[in-house]
Amino acid sequence: MASFDGLERMDALLKALGNPEAGFRAIHIAGTNGKGSTAVMTASILEEAGYSVGLYTSPHLESECERVQIWDGTHRMIEQGELDALRDKVYAAEEDVKETLHNAGIEYGRLTVFEVYTAAAYMYFAEQKPDYVVLETGLGGRLDSTNTLEKPLVSVITQVGLDHTAQLGNTIFKIAREKAGIIKPGVPVVSQTGDLNTKNIFRKVAAEKGCEFTDVSVLIDSYRGYKLAMKGEHQIRNAATAVEAIRAAGIEVSEEAIEKGLASAWLPGRFEILNEEDGKRPLFIIDGAHNPDAVSELVKTYMAFSRTNKIKRTLVIFGCMKDKNSVRMVQLLTGGLRGCSYAAAAVDYERAEAPERIGELIAGCGRGCMVFESTREAYEYAEDSSFECILTTGSIYLAGEMRTLFMKDQ
Image (cartoon, rainbow, N blue to C red):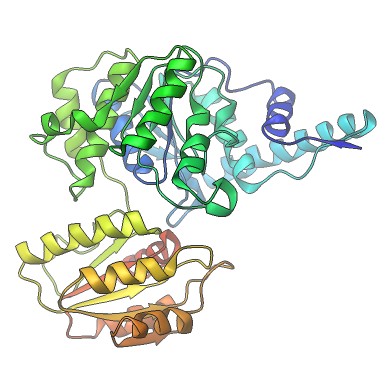
C-alpha cells in the first residue's frame, strides 16, 4: 500500500476542510531563532497601522491558546472551547480522508500535533477574517505544515543555526535548504542572516524562482534608532526584518505605526523580567533560549543588563530537552556569564534532560551546581535566596513553568 509523505497528508486534510487557508494575505516566517519575535513585531506594526491581524506562533509558553491570536486593538487568544471544537473538526475530517484514501490503496498516516494546530488556526482565521495573517513555521520550512500556503505576500527567513538536526540535517547547509523551502515562485524573499554561505543559498533559490530578494543584514544600522520593547541587540535584527517584510509585502504603513508597533511589541519568555515594575529583589528573568545560538545572544544580553543594573549575584537555573546540544549551551553559559551560581532543574516534559546530567555538565565546566527535581523546587529555593537575580533558561517549557509559578504567587 502506498503512503502519503511530505505535505500530501496536510494538503488532503485541508481539501477535506474546504481549504480554509485559501485567500489569506499572509506573511510567512521561518528560521531557527528570531521568528517568534519577528512575527510579533510584524503583527504589532500592522495593528498600529489600523489592520486586524491573525497571529500563529509556536511553541506556547503556558497555554496552547497562545498559538492562535487575533490582534485588532485587543490581543485575543482563541478560547479553549473554540480550539477544542476546531480540533474535533480536524479529527473528524482526518477520519473521512483516511477512509477515502484507504479504499484507494493509500495509507494516510497519523496527523502530528502541529498539523492539527495549523489546521485549527487556518479555520479560525477563515472565520475571523483578519486583514492579514502572520504565520510562523514550527520547524524547518519545506515540509512544515504552514508551507501549505500557496502564495503568501512575502517569505521571511530569520537566523539559521544547528537545531532540530535529526529532522532537518546536521549541517547549516542542509538546514538552510530546508528553510529555503518556504520560498515560492514570484513571492518576495526577506533574509535576515548575515552568514554569507547561508545568504547565498537563499539568494540563489530566490533567483531561481523569480523572487525579489531583500538582505536585511546590510540594513541593520538604519534601525538602531528605534525604541524596542524587547531587550537585546539581536532584537534590532528582528525589528529590521519585520519592517522590511511589511515593505516587501507591499503593505502600506506609516512611520508612526512602525515606531509605535516596535515600541509595544512584546513576546513573553524572551528576556522577560517578571517583576521589573515592583523593584523587588531577586529579579526573576525567564528566557526560552533553547539552542547554542540563542544562548549566545542571551549571554550578551544578560551581561549588558547586569552591568547596567549593577547585579553581582545571579542564580542561573538551567533545564533543557534531551535532543538539544546541552553540552555547548552549558559551555556558553558557564564561560560567558560572570558572578553566577548555577542550578539544574527538571522540566515536566517527556523529552526533558535529567537534571543530574545537566549538573554533571556544569560541574565539568568547573562550576558548582545545585540539582532540583522540579521547577517548583528550584523556584522555592530561589525565592528565599539572597541572590539579586534569578535567570531561568534552556527551554521554553522551563521558562513557562517558572512564569506560571511566579504569577500564581503574586
